[in-house]
Amino acid sequence: MLRSALITACLFSTSVCFAADATPKFKPQTIDDTVEIGYGTAIGDVNGDGKPDILLADKKEFVWYENPSWQRHVIAENLTERDNVCIAARDIDGDGKVEIAVGGEWNPGDTLNSGAVFYLVPPTDRSQLWEPVKLPHQPVVHRMRWVKLDDQKFALVVSPLHGKGNKRGEGAGVKLIAYEKPDNPRDEWQQTIIEDTMHVTHNLDPAQWIPSTPAEEILYAGREGAMLLSYQNGKWSTQKFPLIEGSGEIRMGQLAPENQFIATIEPLHGDRLVLYQSTASNKGIDQRQVLDDNIKAGHAVATADLFGDSRQEIVAGWRTPNKDQKVGVKVYWATDASGKTWESAWIDDNGMACEDLRLGDLNGDGKIDIVAAGRNSHNLKIYWNESK
Figure: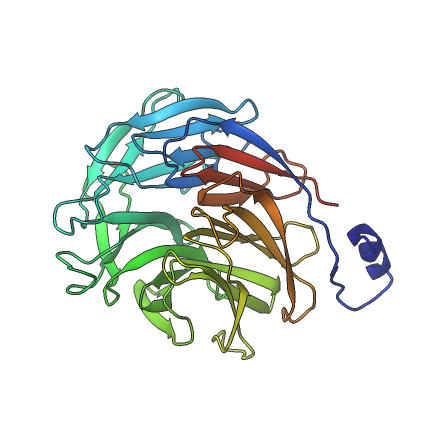
C-alpha cells in the first residue's frame, strides 16, 4: 500500500496510522561543488525577504546562499589563521533577519591557545562583508547555537571540544558558556558558565523538552554521556541521562506531542544511530534502541516531520565509508505508534560525505527539505522533499 493510500484510509479512523512501506522521495540539487570542508550549516533569513537562506562555515570563509537563486555571498573570511569551525544564525530580535555568530581558529590538539568566537555586525547591504566583533573564548571552540531563554531573551551558547589545558581528554572540564548580547554588540557581553563537568564534548541541541516553560532546554552530548540543561528564574540546572552512552551528535524528536525521543550517534564520531525513548511521565529516558550500526564517522543528525503525518523522522549523515564503502545521508521513520519498529531509506547514496546537515522548508510548499555539506565530497546540496 502506498503512503498516500494509507493516509486516505486514516481519515476514516480515530487511531494513529503509520505507513510501514513508505517511499520517501527527495530530489538532490547541488548548489556548490567547491566546498573545502563544510564544517557547519544553518538555515535562516539573512536579508529579510521572507525566504530562508542557507549559511555555511567553510575552511576560511563564512558564506550565505540567497534563496531562490542560491547566489553565494561571503559574510566574513580569514578571521583567524586556522580553520573556521562553526556558525549560529537565528532571528533573536524579531526583525525578520538572522543574527550571526561564528567560531574559528580550530586546532583540537591545542587546548590552551586555540579557538575564537565572533559576533558579526551586518552592513546595510547584507551581501557585503560583515564586521567581526571578537568575544572572549575558551580554547578549542567547536559548536554554537542561539538558545531561547524566555520570550524576549536569547543567549549564544558556545561549546568547546576539550577543557582548557586538557591532555587526552583528562584535566579541566569543558566550560559550556552562554553569552548574552548587549544592545551594542561591541560592548562587553555577559557570560555564564552553564556546565563544566564533561571533558570531551561534541554537540548540543536547543529543544523544547519541557513544553510548559518559555525557555528552550539544551540537550548536550559528549564522550562521557548526555544531559539536559534547563534555564528557569535566571539559573541553569542539570539533569543527566544515565542510559545514554558517550555520543557525538544529539537531537530531540517527537512521535506525538507526549511521545518525545532522543536520537544520537554513538560513540563520538561513531558507527551507530541510536534511539532513546521514555515510558515515564517525567521525561526521563529508559529505553535504548540501535537503529543503524552501519555508519562510520557519523557527524550529523536532525529531526523533523518530513512526511506531514504529525510525527518526526530522523535524518543522519556520515563522512567516512562504512562497511559497504559508502558515505551518505539516510532517513529513518517509525512504522508504529510506539516507535518500536523503524525503516530507513537513502537520501544520498555515496554522493555526500556528510559533515553537517540542517532541515527546513526552503520553497514554502509546506514540506521540510534537507541541506547537507560534504567534507571529502566537497559539496553543498539541497534535497527537495517530493514525498507524497
